[in-house]
Length: 140
Image (cartoon, rainbow, N blue to C red):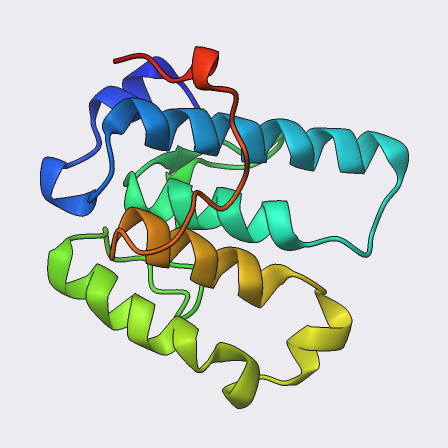
């Protein structure tokens, strides 16, 4: 996540402030890094938050090796950029994700919850931020 990524977020893609969204996205990315460094493989919640934020933000993913690509939607895995109608469709699909793909509950614990919490918060503006962020990290 870069400042450029945050600046490019389409205004219609968020129902929360850009600064608050950026703080949550950064917190999710940090938590994913921490868990990876600790060898934790049974907490996918922050990854669900991070990939959902990247898709909503229409971010570019830069893998360690290989070519860059547009962030995929977290549920339907579409390569199409996020915009209002697609975000709503993704939200509806996320609400049924663990029913349609129950294997994710065991193989990626927390993944479905992280996606749903992020979409509810950032898109529907319903519920708390998916990860706590100190208010000092949220400007404005």
